[in-house]
Length: 493
Image (cartoon, rainbow, N blue to C red; front, side, top):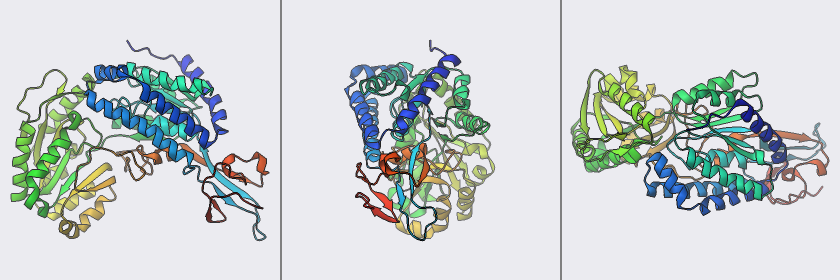
């Protein structure tokens, strides 16, 4: 039984977070980085209990969970390194000059204030209690209140206790991190609407993310909601690529489509190509691949039921036929792989076929002409990823399509498949609405920290009152823009 946190308890935790923000505002980037590295060490020390608990709650394989744990540790350490070198403080200093009216101006980024993080169901470590949202918000100088996902409460508790223990060991205010439980939407709504909350991070469904976004914008003081929501992550395949790779491409697509029972936000749900012998070879090979996929446990009953509902809805639309389904019968809560096919014309007119089906389910769209492919590209909603399966010659010949696709996604792939999101600086995990609520930011990679800062400028302040990041001495030894030039040393006046 998951306890429904009372409003009184939520208020107390938010009050402690508000007090902790005043502490964090005066912490340096080096101090916060040290805390983050200590949290990474603590998570790394967690033994088999963490993996076994997560496996019992999510049915995810132990190997997958071990990899996700390592990724989570890497996120804390990688983000800590980025924070420590001052990238996200963006210090700017303009010294007094005879022709300047305002004198000495210095600007840097500080945290926003208490941040609410909503845990995700499909990543119990990397996108939940101790996930990238929590790491990047703390790194930016914000206290975090996590709304635990009800699909893995015990896993979340282990992670929360680890973070809390480190904060206590470091003798930092306990309000820097806390967690809240509950099944009803009321808890999330109350958190989002609370006057002292300054930002929200969410990974999940479009309905959930959009509801939080609307609530945040109805407040007396609107706040940003960084929500990663649904995406069909289409693959556009062009003619030459089929000549030598039709069967190989089918293997790649089927593997990516069904990876983790299709429960990845970058699952490539739609495959689009011109009709012809090449696409026919691809479809025949895909049929064999899908038939051989063994059904796998889905994360929980709710996800399974939604998968079955949306798969059935899409599969029973007019002018749609089944290509293949796994030959193995599914057991309770298992996702059975399935792929359907329709025409480009039908895909264009029936917008329901463009909706995400979260699970091992795909649609092959057979287009009659280049113009149909253009039309599909034009009407596509915002996506996390779009893949171009092509040769270099294909890319040259279809530059008009590719140019349109740049407007529709956060990550544009040239071959390969989109599942698997590397935690590096150049990763963009976010895209135009409705894949996310703010296309300017990523939720993966050190640049995730950017979401949770705001600039403040100091005019003519004595050096002793300035934050360390802006003082003349530059004790943190970070790069700063001084009078328009990169400068890493002290300022000598």
